[in-house]
Length: 161
Image (cartoon, rainbow, N blue to C red; front, top):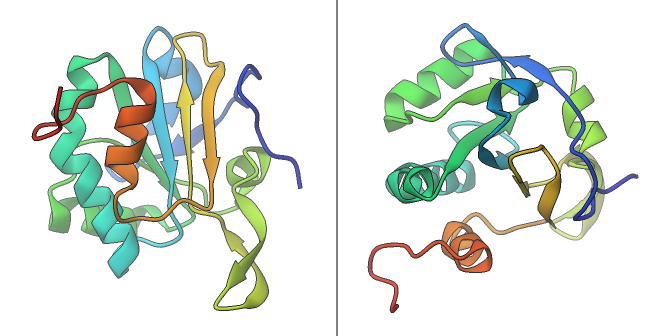
């Protein structure tokens, strides 16, 4: 399975969003992007992670980042998730898993000691030209946003200066 590395151009994509529109990597050109991949909307871990990004989105936005969530869920489920959790950033649907596979975020993983094939919770930070700055795989939902913010130099509320 191919995994992205810092310095590589991020694979291009165009996917449907929870609000019924389309979003592509090209639409985000000129902005830094936090692209986070999660297995399934409305599950405990994925909700924790999404709400953590929601609660800190303004800080990332102020620092010039766009936050985008990606899962293989159908658009209708993403729309319910966005509404239920008041998620203002785009959620995109990759039902055929082409983008997830291109980013190395779909494939074999360990789940409760067993090897399974599925979505690998991952986060990618892209620069303004769409080049990978950070590629993190098998991240934990809880505490991930704070760890990522520290790695990219974004100070979250309550963090010591």
